[in-house]
Length: 477
Ligand code: ABC
Ligand code: CA
Image (cartoon, rainbow, N blue to C red):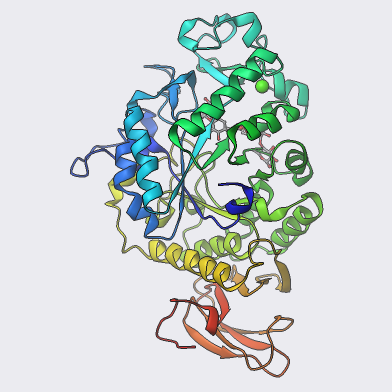
């Protein structure tokens, strides 16, 4: 799909090695501290597409697929996550065969789902650091002097030249920095991504380490891919990231919002003003905030749930990323209540959960995606309109993104019931509304306003009852 179509998608992120085993009857232990392959495969993922679709996600972001270095007894473990590229022209056989991968994409398409593949362009991996010498095992990048930047570590993230031309990683696994200035390297990458997307019929790509490659490398790469691309520019500064939206790719991850949510919804005594500031700064800096990738957890950061145990706070954090403009990204395991901390603990095996579709958060994501679908169906401008904050105090935010109004709060599940008067709703008088979280009916007054009831610190999300679709089916329009 293209950037415009991407606006209506809802993405579920997996680490292939940890998501699903080929055989559904098999059970394998997976100690995240060991940092080794645990056995997840593309076949296993294919078998579990209905589990993902059951929550209403239509797009699956799979971890990198290409052959990685084969390391054992390394302090950093094995390449189970897929980011330690060796040969971009071979697949990682741990996850299956070419036929398996094609079958995953094909089955997804038959179910009306899409596959987003994670791609790494900035580096290949080696255990040799400064002594690295490329050879034929690195596929097309086998001439050290031509294909790689000379060795130096990225140490100072404020020095952009260093960020782009020095190496990530460490002495255990060095990420040999590819010479993305060389014209033959550039054309190798562009041809590769074009073929990769067409061979497997991928629908979108997630691009790793975007800030580590010069900005003007990306437009040709993205256009060669020919599909929607979302870039990882890991930085908290919206101005820094926005430059990439202008010069490199239309869609990038919303790290500024992530940091604001992570710190303001992690306890009941924080002010939510940080979230409002992040939203405002984003609006100022980004050309198009509707293409930002919103998330509360991913594979690089401690899970939100590792430091927030209150379910009400967890639900509110999620309600923010669904309540504002942008594309929601949900990291696998969140629906099962996983609580892994920093990498590698946040990469738990999902089969250990039994894929329980009865879990409270599984149902919650189903509701969130249903709200999003109902809004998209109800309004032709939902995908492109921006959210505004129409009410705000330290612990409550009222987010309006027509035709949805979301009230989020960090008062926590022990909070007493409270009332909030909601004005400037955009609704006409006598509009029937439903809070689709509590399934409570409301009617707007002669000014289109109403008084909302906030219970147990949960979010409240209002849709015109006539537009709520199948949500809260006990309340009729
Ligand atoms: C392994 C171990 C880790 C160990 C590490 C040294 O080695 O597992 O425990 O700490 C892959 C694997 C990792 C592996 C690495 C290295 O490779 O998944 O498990 O870590 O071997 C992407 C991917 C990520 C992937 C790689 C490498 C890149 O999402 O999964 O890692 O292909 C930088 C990069 C970013 C990268 C991230 C891990 O590192 O820019 O692309 N992610 C600052 C910098 C960021 C930097 C970040 C973390 O620190 O600005 O550029 O990201 O090092 C905000 C500031 C930010 C600041 C953050 C921390 O705070 O605004 O600027 O980010 O407030
Ligand atoms: Ca680089």
